[in-house]
Image 1: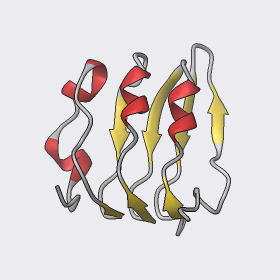
Image 2 (image 1 turned 90 degrees about the horizontal axis):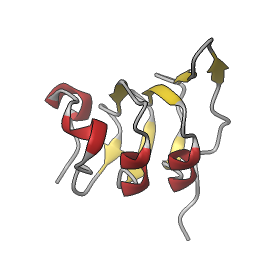
Image 3 (image 1 turned 180 degrees about the vertical axis):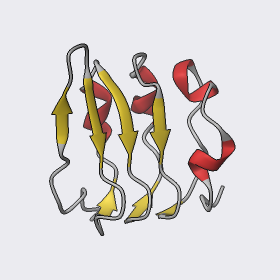
Image 4 (image 1 turned 120 degrees about the vertical axis):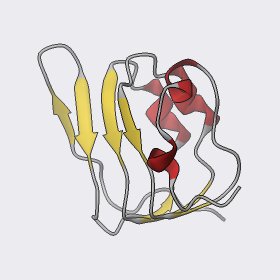
Length: 98
């Protein structure tokens, strides 16, 4: 059975939205699809952890998301497409095995 990330995300409220920078925290498990419910999330950095599985397609619903990086994990599968995900640079997804 797959296990969600084993540590809590540190989410910071800003004047107009939310940001989370959780790079290099040794998170393991998969990225929870429920992050797609954080409608006002503007930045999400999950790089340099030990996350596995796919990037949930629900994250495409985050239309305020301006910054996303999930490189240097153990992620696999296709990168979601649509909305803001079409604007992220290729290096946001380095080392993801398609």
